[in-house]
Length: 471
Image (cartoon, rainbow, N blue to C red; front, side):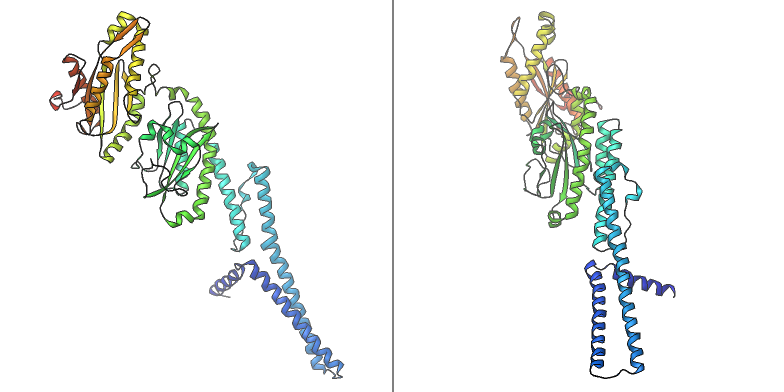
């Protein structure tokens, strides 16, 4: 037989083998039944002829014996073929499936390369084999992932690793947030695309994030518009999975999904989301242990005296905050505040009283701006206030309100009441500069101008205050 004939025969064979088990077994049984009926009818007519006294000729007897042998042989062949086919196509793969499942249940670490079941026929058994092989692949991948992240040096590496595995699951758009429970803040630690927008409100108040607050999956697949902070309403669906360990939410994985009918009904998508759950479950205890080791680093984001955010935290979130401001077309107000003659408090009353005044000033500033605004201890007696999403000129009005509050307030100390004033320099991003650190420098320059003009003033930055080319 030539090569073309072999290929054609192979195609015909596989066409039959890949039919449903129902049709294959039915065909074998059908042939056997047909042969049996043929034998019954043949014997019936032959016996009837004998009863009626019709003698069989030698040739007819010979034909009868030949036919009998042929039909018997045919039945035997089909029965043997059926037994062999049942063993190789049903019993053998089912035994392999049972062994693999037993290994997964009782001793999963013993799974080696031979755990994969080889079965090329695409019938019902083939589908079950493929599912078991997929289960083994998923299990191995998760086991490998867990062993790798346990040996990663930092939490940041683990987030990067988790992001890479989510990409391998064909999720093209997602963000991983880390939650600081001590500060009740969130920060993006991995983005599938740097251009993805993030709502800044939940960065400063993590409880604004529903998945973080509840510790449960939050998805628009089940309830449209369930999260008002989601940036891409009516553009994509979201599926937010909390990273939970020890009854604490350590982070949130926000997956973006297309708004299509297929997304709502896709079985493959549900399988991928379930696998993402498994990866996150393996990740959470490792992240928790790594974060305990990095607790000191976490604490350095806040000033221990005033409990305000410090400059390090500011540097971490500033670029993303400014991107949000530019996308929304709003303004970021920048107030650089400095207590007037603060050194004299330390000199006259001592540093304990000075610390008390700083703490009380921090409280007054924080309580008299919005929760979405950010108050930072910039250094010494200087405070930086960022007013998020304001209108042009509004920052100066807020600064004047704060100046009056400090001016009229009496600081109660063990050594009596103290009154102090505050000077504030104001600039606006991107009105005064499209570079955020330059805009902060302009607010600082305006603050020094307020000091020069007698203190207890609010001064709005003007271009003629700064003539240098670089800041």
